[in-house]
Image (cartoon, rainbow, N blue to C red; front, side, top):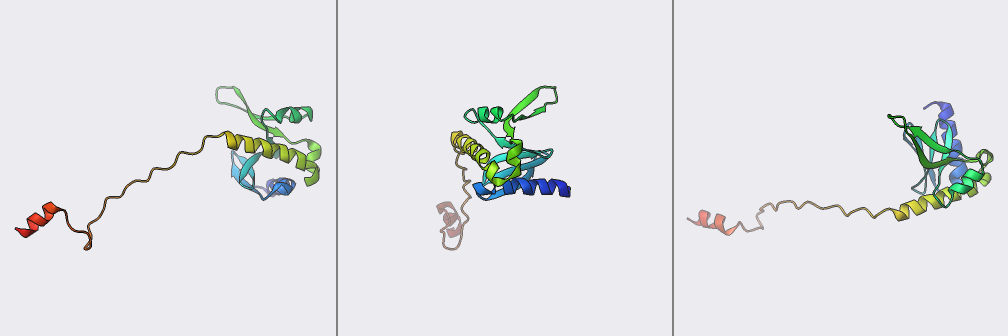
Length: 145
């Protein structure tokens, strides 16, 4: 990662820090941004994209924001639920706060709508005979002969 990339990631984390503990993780050829372990933003090609949903998308559209999209191998365009932050919001944490709150609300709704993870099955380990564990009856019979 170049120093310019690192500076932009640090800047975006500072912008989102009023929402809670912000951290970045490399992914998708960019970075995923989390606030209090809630995934709510992407950085791709030095552009910050915030999580949206049906409840918040119109506010991003009205502010002139653009969706994150990409082309598949077969040429289709896929539009994701992440939209650019308004340009003026990139200037300060105070200006980003309302947009970060919208992204957080969208991320919380998405997390709440997911089915809970199925509990992991534990695999039973075969019991090993120990000195304190009596041998099965068949083994005792053979030993007693």
